[in-house]
Length: 171
Image (cartoon, rainbow, N blue to C red):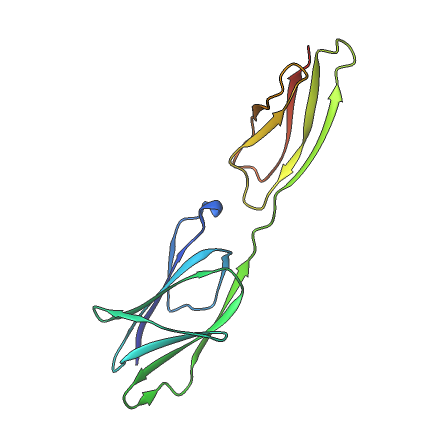
């Protein structure tokens, strides 16, 4: 007999979301790479078995609570079976996990020459990503230096879609 059912979600770092705990909820929508932890308390149960599509996993028992951890990368359904010596639950408990895939960032770049003094090259463009950016760097070489120079371009990490500009000196 199922007494309590808790699902803890640890979101991937790139989402910048805080961990979350849900009670008596099994169907969820999560970002790709989230770590799920199921905690189940039940009476008259000797084991708890999870079935993910064609993969079967047995939950571990610790201090009266059955737990299972799993990293989720793809949309899946799962079933939970509570078992004892007398059988298992007649109807399997079935849930769905909808995974939102992380999209690749988009970048568009253009360059413009200083046609007045010929002292710089302007590089500009736009960037966008479903979870935002932590930084934007531009690497370039000049004729005088065969090594790459790294330029840190100022962006706002809280904005998911934005424009950028940077001047490269050419004198």
